[in-house]
Length: 282
Image 1: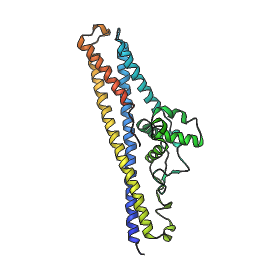
Image 2 (image 1 turned 180 degrees about the horizontal axis):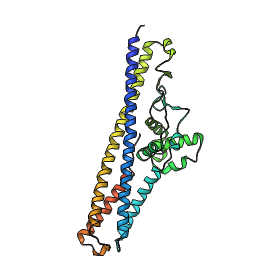
Image 3 (image 1 turned 180 degrees about the vertical axis):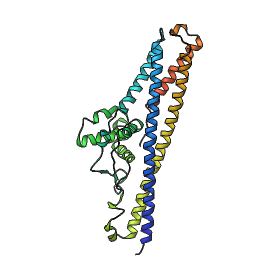
């Protein structure tokens, strides 16, 4: 048939792009889970510093301010990490969401609890997630999508469209071209090969754009994870060194030791702030 090879090549190229996306999205889930694990370790390191500083007598008031800020960041992270999978599942719309253009449909698979928490702490914000489970229907869908997108547009986030794009993390189940399934559809026999090839090329371009976005996501997740590991390890070593002094009263510290303790608290605050860093989806 005329242009049949053109159609076959275009569809094959499109499907290859979809497969690359699926692999990349799976990697994003893995990296998100790894980051969450490192952040959980960092929270424990932060708690250890807090306990040590609070155990000292006659510490300076400036530490109270820093410790208060640290607790805010830690609490926000814990709230996000307790985000329930149901909140993400609420964003499923009729089994699929057109998140990358009218001609391309992404079927949305349900996240497991661990993956949901990883996505929540990597991409989301803690400010609205807790309330989603109390909503239903379209309200729950819209709230979940906005939450995943980094918050409502009015609040400076990416809104529902950004959240919809992020749901691609669950993996495409039923990619289509122009609403017609790529494989196993007799409808292809009634569509001109050239038209199908053109649609395949157009949809491939959209998938390639998504691939570029997810490549950026993964690079930033790796950066945050590496920073978290470095800060956590450094914090633990500093705490061990100061604890080894075996001094329970701040007034017994030398000038250099007080400076070291102040640096420890400042570094703890820096690590706590890193818990709040999220990957933007827009």
